[in-house]
Image (cartoon, rainbow, N blue to C red):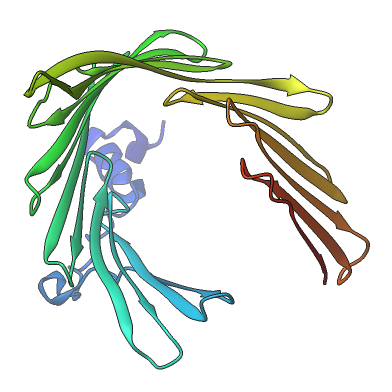
Length: 271
């Protein structure tokens, strides 16, 4: 037997020498985090031009707080450079603030989810001291909901709206003044309005009832043609719009309006 192998001291020495060297800890980073600044939020600039009024609409917006909120500035200007309707807006998921720089008025909107099927929203005009509170309850999926809304300050029962996949029906109380024997009496009446829509002949047919007037509308549109007839009852007013595209620059537009005075107006434009 080798003497070096049999000696326990030699075995300990060999084991220590064969073990890998322990790496030194990395030196501390020399970067000074105290002077570091967060990255600047990206700006988005949008400009739209209205050829009829010759006005520009500008909008500058940026997101911050990890895209949890948005700050927006919008205004109009004409060909002379006059600025109008400047507005600053702060928009987030549950709170938004819109401030008009000309009228010095602010509109505050907020929304809160109360449970999985209830949502509470509110709007308040600070200058006019008026607002509205709305509660929406999703009754069943898909597309069935009940909405209750009331103005502030309250002037009566809230407006109730029942929504379903094919439209909606609304009930609202209205106060009317009636003259009776040199006295003015206030009478409460119930107003009914609603919208019903559905597919018909590859288009959408819509019936809208409001203020004792029924409007029947049919809209058809494809890549080359679109037309929109509207019939109002009981006035029997009829309007009709027709558009036809023949090419990239060749378009035909026809409008027909028949008011209750039996007056016909036809406009044909070839663009």
